[in-house]
Every structure is written in structure tokens, then in C-alpha cells.
Image (cartoon, rainbow, N blue to C red; front, side, top):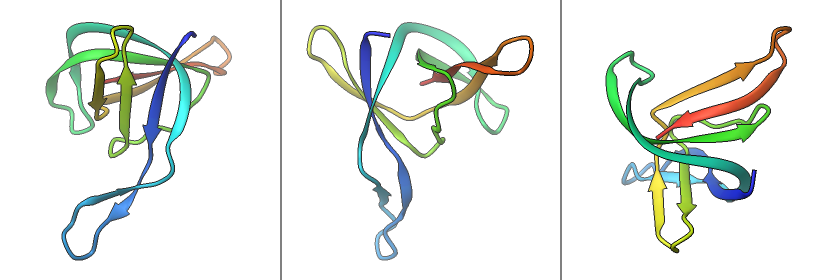
Length: 101
């Protein structure tokens, strides 16, 4: 995996204004595939995904976290996860974590 994404983990909300508070950024190696597809979000609703991040093994990503990706042209885009899944081998060992955004 040659691409990188910055994961900003959600840690809570500002008590006065309700704005999200994020913890220290984590740089993760990934593969990002652009492409529009229908996925189901955490409430079971069909939503449109603009791309998928693939991470090696099991990665802790939450629905309130923020993913910031810089593509090869230098365009910076921030995403929120829509769907998170783990791809496992035949014995249940996690191979990849897939995050649709």
C-alpha cells in the first residue's frame, strides 16, 4: 500500500458549541479507490459512496472519525466514513479493513 491518509480520531464534542473534537492525527498507509457505488450506512440506509479506503489488517476507524486524503495531483479532500467492514480469511484472521466514504 503506497498511498497515505491522515486519520483524525473523534474524541468528543465541545460542551459549549457542540463542535467535534479530534485527537492527534495518525498517518496510515492505504489504498484509495475512487468510484461511485451504493452502500449501506450504520443505520442501514442506502447512501452513495465516492470511494473506498483499504487498510492492511485491522484498523480502528469510527463513524465519527475524519479521513484526510491528498491525491497524486495534490488535491486534499476530507471524508467521513459511511460504511466500515473487515475482510477476513477462512479462519477469521483480518486481512483488510474497508472504509467506504
